[in-house]
Length: 226
Image (tube, rainbow, N blue to C red):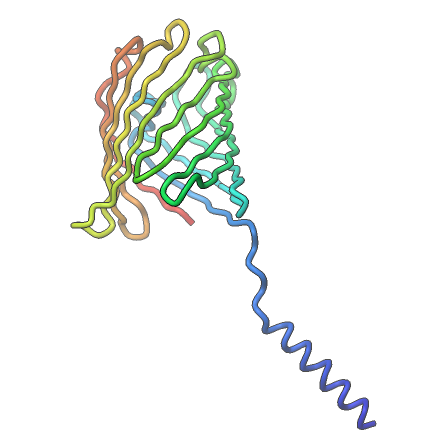
């Protein structure tokens, strides 16, 4: 009887320890986001004719550097009002200050598959700068022929004098076929936390073949990440 009591006590203590021991950290992390913007601008061009857009996405990342996600927004193009982006990436460190990423991104337009576009991409980041190349492996947003390339340089800076304030700068060049050739765009944005959201004010413009669509757009966005 005494032996049984000791055994039961041991089992009880072991079970209690197992329940109180912290679980091993997961190799996966997930995040979601939702945003409301006064104008959805992509590579310098409004995607919804200057109207508001509701956007949202979900991402899953692994400690190995692999990640994947989905993102969607309403748009205003011929025969479509919805864009869904599907993407996967692999990020890795090159050194203490340099990192890199390679990936694939598919732009899918509900109701108008002629606009669907697939791009492979590669980027290098250091000291707040990110240089990225995107190469279309399909037609480019309705323009026949693969091979259009988009080069971009981005810079992100935390403004030390104002806690939470960040600055973003962007410059991009399209090098492609037919009507997609030699367009340039640029943007500047300021972001600041607002009541649990991130508020951003941005200005973007551009020049080139699609000059009539570069209008000097100022957009205000509220985004929540969870």
